[in-house]
Image 1 (cartoon, rainbow, N blue to C red):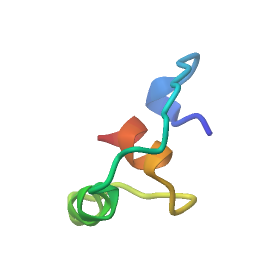
Image 2 (tube, one colour):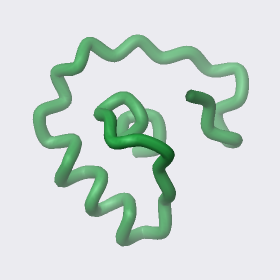
Image 3 (cartoon, rainbow, N blue to C red):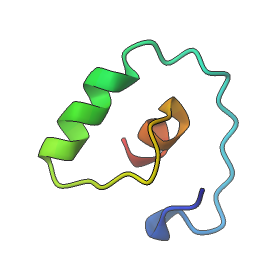
Image 4 (cartoon, rainbow, N blue to C red):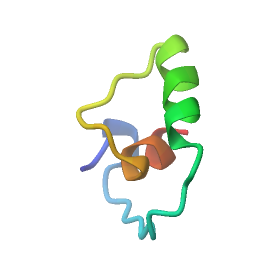
Amino acid sequence: MTAPTLAGTVAFVDGETYNFRELRTELLSLGNEFDADSDTEVVSQG
């Protein structure tokens, strides 16, 4: 997954973002859009 603003960026996430659902909800309220329901995508947009 590569967000348009992160083109060329690589992230390694170990899946330990326990509050990603809360972060995702907050980012959605700010107008962010997601393609999936994963903590990796939330971290990349946050």
